Image 1 (spheres, rainbow, N blue to C red):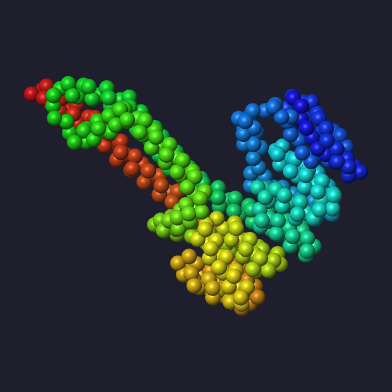
Image 2 (image 1 turned 180 degrees about the vertical axis):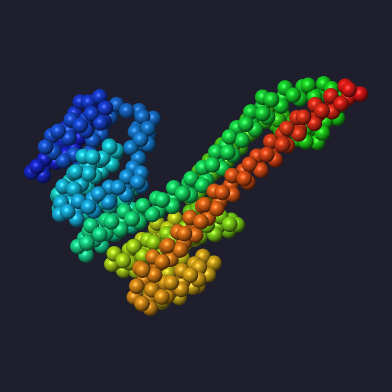
Length: 406
């Protein structure tokens, strides 16, 4: 296969060429031996199908964990007086993810060409968020880039850990529901129809539970296309509706009203709000700019609107804590009071850090408690559903055997 590459030589001149290789990785290895800085590498048009392109993108997806490790290692190297471009080249050389490697090399090349580090990173928003880029800008202005990178890594690591805990808590019930649904469908389509023939042949009155199961089975067998169409419509709706502004607003508002789970989400968003704002303020970013950044990454449109409204009023001279107190349902009294303390003492970042610790503990406690509760709830729920199925099948058989004995 032929790959088209673009690179810069030692003099800074850009060159474009082709390289023959069996795989993309082999092409990268060949080019890494040359004395050039690789900017891009693409397979020649016509060589890769759409499906293969998609699979390559999935395989080369950069995880948050990789970005965390990259940020921490970059901080250590810069603190050791290694220039950012040299540090990035070294990190690219040890990065296994080809897509990430190419982006790091592109950033390094831009920095060598005189581009500010924050601007070079901002060219890849899918990897380096507006939060990340603005933190880098702060580090460039203050001259404390290593410390800022460490704070970025700590922040990303904290968010990653909480996300993993939440996902882990949800995996078990979701798997159980999927497995039960598959078993239910198999029973309805393949088992019950055979049983119906036997039961109806006896001429006996069937129990109510059995009739429900038979009607459900008949619907699955005779109108499977309606079931399939309904499932497809639901899946399409669940995928596309949240991507619309109206859909996102409705879902975000609804989630916060769900009993028990809504409180958990509120804690997550408040912790994210406090942590991002604390990190940005501590890095020397003005509160109005920090609020603008936090609004874009808080992850819920309800809180996004509150934060943007807070920013507008702060710019007009209103107190930050007073504005937050106008939203008692979304912003807790603890958050408001700690913000007020931070304003009075001039240490808003440290006050918000205490808020983050509190809400992180609350979220962790919820995840741990819900994990211990989910298992018995799922077992009881499955037992009831299985019991209903078994009763629906065994009751008519028991009646037949009783009639034969009499």
